[in-house]
Length: 151
Image (tube, rainbow, N blue to C red; front, side, top):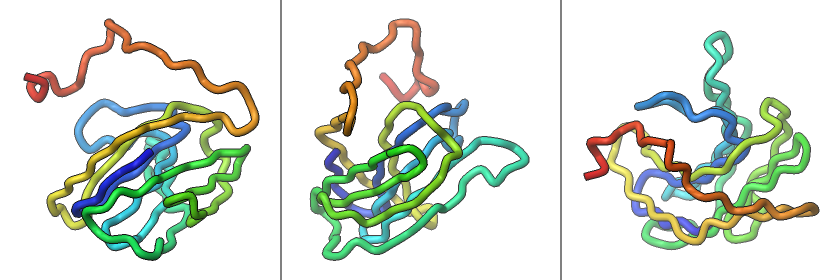
């Protein structure tokens, strides 16, 4: 997946096992974010009340990251090993077995409640050593949470 950062951060998600119910709800799954300053984070989010909802697994700095540029982000899952890449260079590596399977997703946000602009292009899902997942169509039974936004 390619993303362009103008400010704030953009990222990808994996093994998303639940999406929550609305505003400010963090999906249950793993997400890797890349900030315009080059800081890369890998989080796991559980949505469980008695467990910290969002845990930082690891963070590193990716070199030569600037705003207004396209970057290719990739997450690789192999058992409990999670590896994050920026422009095909391994940046993050963590071991966690909280969530075993789930969907993929895109995510963006900001630090300190500042504006965020992130664009995404060319999302690709590939299986490393197995059968590639089949594309699925949009279910006609699903409805967006925020209907007033889609006018």
